[in-house]
Length: 539
Image 1: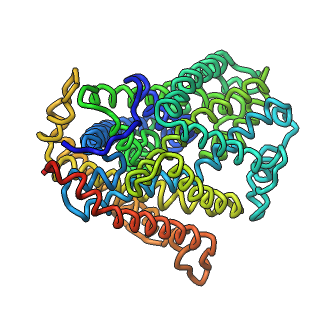
Image 2: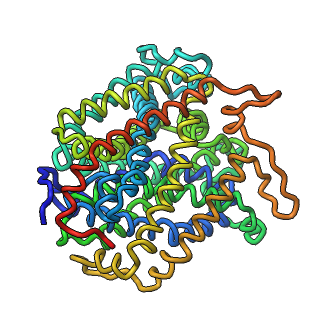
Image 3: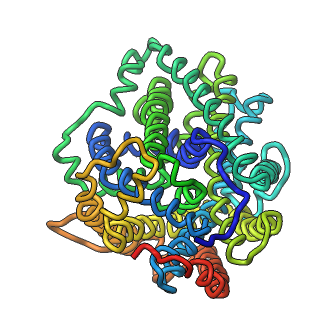
């Protein structure tokens, strides 16, 4: 077999597991997951969450690991190259460009949030934050420029600009060093460090007791119960919104459908155990999310602020509510610094993983080296981040790109992956490939799950998501009503809701990026055909 040689490789199984776990362990584990669980009824949400994990998360994870390593055998490490090589059809490459658009598009705003985490860690360390007198919601709005476009460009300690530059420098220094000396090296340090920090914070939260005698109900047990105790489970599980939230959390948390695992797995060999590695990385993520994130944020917020103070969504909980908690906690400045350092480390391991698919694509599509590919990707992502950074008012640009790339396209990519694995290639052939080098076997029942249950579940969730979040469906089957949402009206407008220029520009930027990646894929097609023609594809 003739394949393009690459000097990139993982140095150990532990390294690739740490890197994949690092790509999954991020802000969603410690902020988004607890908030979703509290919003949708605790125990009922956890039931839907674990069902979604088994049907969607594990299935797509194994499919992505298998397809990635299989494509890597042909010398391809990017989603377009892998899809084209395995399916032996020119159109397959263009389907694969979604696996480049998603990580590059998400990185453009994710690195901006990463800078928030670093900024808050530094401000807690220096004493700018940690006092009960600080107006934390106002401070956050000032820090990220929510009140005015262009305001966040400033480089002061209380503005995000300096930290955006710092995280970009760190990210591209590490990605330039490559897989083993950059991503793997950092993840081997960062993952144990963030788990150790999380354990310290969890122990502190679980030993808080009842800090305010005036509110005896605000104690650790009730804080845990606020998240975990089931309510009316049957009624809550009948709510489509709960299933949308649970499935969305699985995608967001495990990084399945991002295209990251596809690229990471392409650097493995037939001797590597991808079944066990995939399951180990998934388990590590679940430990961080359920075991650490679930014990850390919500109980602490409940103990000091009560149930009413826990609301606020991902950003509100992380940057408005929890700083108030730390400000009222003994040694809160120290724990505030540790918490945001934890978030920063988790964000870096995730953002690094988002860069590698784009670099692999540019390297093999243009036939250039890592230095040039890192430079080109840096120029492209800096442009996108500058856009998000400048149009910071109400976080409109960030929210729009997150909706269409970080949610919509991820559902599409995840569905494509499982259909390709189970229906185009076939589960028998796919499992045979997955079992090469594996010490354990995928349970046979997952053949049925991946072929029938997972696609049906995904498509059902996806169409419900479109109905609720695009068409404005009221999530009622008995009395359905539709009222287009803000995401739709931002683009098409109405008499009451004029279109948003920033939202339109954001979607336009996504389209331009997709066209750019598509053109490069087209130009690379002839060379890729020659590269993969020496051996038949998956069919």
